[in-house]
Amino acid sequence: QVQVVESGGGLVQAGGSLRLSCTASGLHFADYSMGWFRQAPGKEREGVSCISASGATIHYADSVKGRFTISRDNAENTLYLQMNSLKPEDTAMYSCAAGRYPVCSNLYPVNEYNYWGQGTQVTVSM
Image (tube, rainbow, N blue to C red; front, side):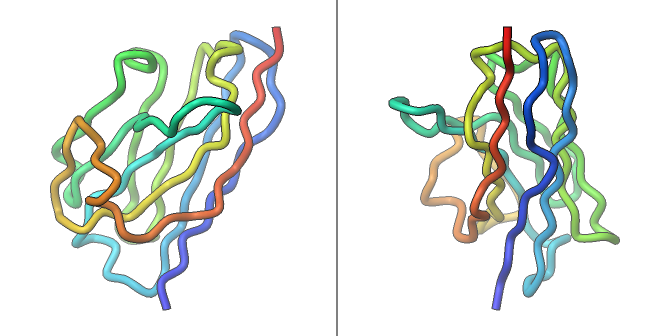
């Protein structure tokens, strides 16, 4: 059984940082791309960043470029999202997902991700 679990969310002031983690079990982590998504109240889910299975290819949404860094540790089956210079508009539920393929698209098609975590809340105050 595949399990995807996020952690690291919380409340932070604008300009602050948080590091999200996502562990995936029950699958061969190193074979699949991984992605971070977020959804704010009343808004559609959006792709934040994704990373290929090897880590060689990374995509970021324009809204987070230069502030967020995605990485993965295939030996530990863990995905990370380092979030710096946080803004109130970054407030959302952040979820990670395991991709169906070794590579990921910068269009973040939801149907290319087949295992999702429950999410971790990130709240950025002014």
